[in-house]
Length: 253
Image (cartoon, rainbow, N blue to C red; front, side, top):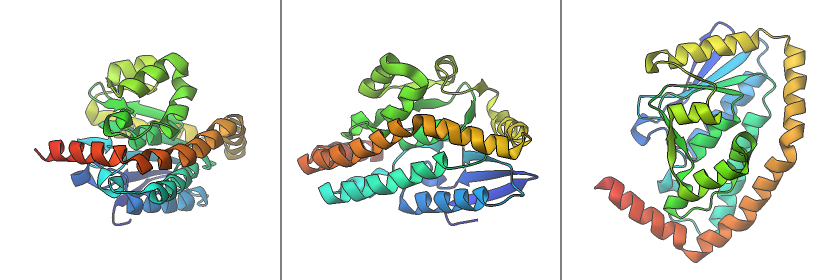
């Protein structure tokens, strides 16, 4: 258990909870570091066969990047942030065992593509999912590539350029979630699904996940390279800083 995550073991299934409810479980450096450490520990523990990821509270699975962390970055800071975010995302891709997202509430921006990096996702009709980064002046790059794997080009363009969030029913129709259940059952159903996946032969699971990872590695590597190249350009212009400041001022009101 860390300062901003909690870990619960339900037999062979580990439940990892993003635990910054006052910040809607938004990602900052401390949360990213704890999640990466928890994923590495889980991956190396033969007693644990599957993982469920969820968010504390009922406001958000993960509201995305904590804007207070990135609102004042310069170009060099934006590059360092992209490297840190890339390592965080790679930790999910490098898992040898199955991971299921229990999407208990909103999953936006970096929280949205955290959910997309899980093997399967369980939600409820009231969830909201999407990529609103463009609305706060941040180019949508990493999430765009991850969305493309699930949604194809046309819907990815729609969600990326409009920044709109979809509800649970649309998320199910688009394939962003695998199942919808009542809100009170999201975590339990995700644990049940993780247990089903964890019961598969472990070497076959590991090698299958490796094959899937290799199939998509060029797209992921390209996303990281594009982010490292374009985010510093955005931050050098001052546009993200101005847009985020305006958004945070509105949010306070």
